[in-house]
Length: 106
Ligand SMILES: [Zn+2]
Image (cartoon, rainbow, N blue to C red; front, side, top):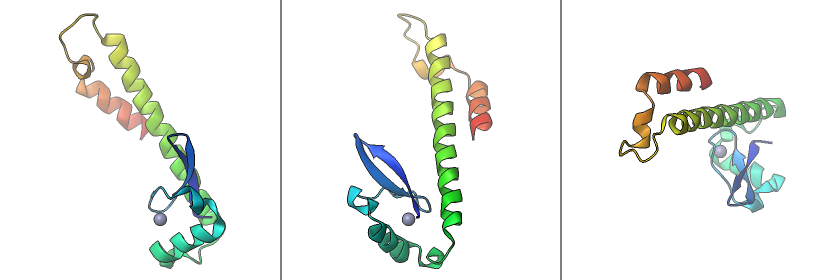
């Protein structure tokens, strides 16, 4: 299977682990996923299922890492935000700190 799942506005949709395209919910059917694989990634159509499972694990890890980095940045901005300040929220965190977070999590 060449897909992972993602949620869009409460609807579970398959996501191709190769091109990360979010497919329509009807594509959860194996035949529709095979159609996407053959149409978009014909060169990979005969790869063992383990290859796609590994790729799916990588996609999930990337999502977790991105979420962790976003939450850490949001936390730092919120922590450094001064009440009633005119200073934009994005200026409450230094570029150096932002890069450190991104490099640790990606
Ligand atoms: Zn694809």
